[in-house]
Image (cartoon, rainbow, N blue to C red):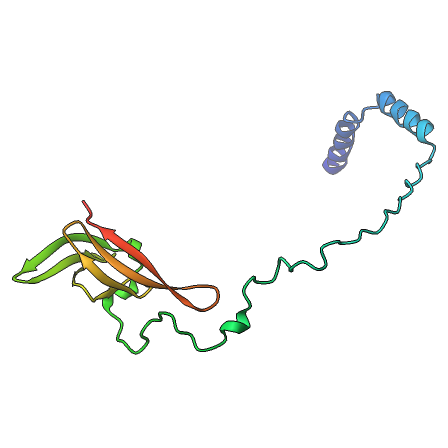
Length: 169
């Protein structure tokens, strides 16, 4: 009995949610149907363009290299890294992660102190290597260390690039 009363009460509550005042919606739908009546405008006609004659057929292709690569197909004579040389500890790090923190001098020997990202100090002099691009130390002074890196280009050739690390505060 309680179940029947609960069902009847639910139906009465739900009937109150129905709104029969949708006259404005029905009027809009009838107006829209009367306006268009299922008619669709035809697709516009496509106008054929005249073919284009490319006048630069005798000019160099802009997507081909200016220099004929086959001319230089002999053995590569530029700089290249020494692959047989044992790698030094500072070659594991990129140059921007290394910091110069000081200098040392004893008699005629000069060194700089380089701190790696883990905080370990390294003593470096001219001829040592550091950085991921085969950077060889060429000069040191109290303000900075100068080195020459070997960087590979898109043609698998190597180019020298100057770099330096300045003394950190």
